[in-house]
Image (cartoon, rainbow, N blue to C red; front, top):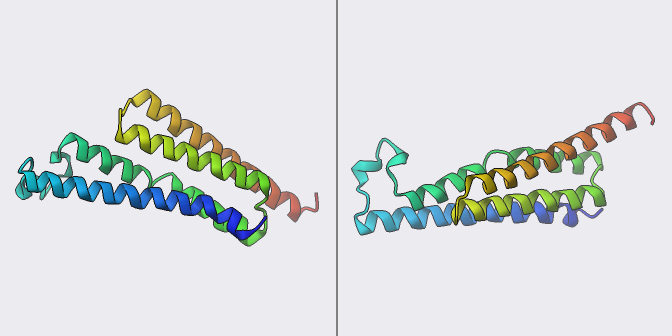
Length: 143
């Protein structure tokens, strides 16, 4: 599998994270400019932001949690040459689940839907790690 094919899902995931960061920043600036929130209101506590801003903030923070395990796995899979077509397909499945999660988080924010998207992504990522582990250790013992 080419390095580019393995890395495209990573670039998409990173792109989503940056888009959410920009949306959060834009929402924060708009809230401050409109007077909806004052600088003193948020100086010591981020929970004083308006609901819409918190949605972007929480979505951004979520993209900085579980995806870290994905980034590490991609690097390790490239180094060990264990990234194949299955790995790329599962990478796209994981990134798609994160896109859905972010979309739900920043729109309807229905917790059950958000949790389902989150759970699907975590399950896919866990299976990816298991497959990777099996491949690494089975090659070590000559299987």
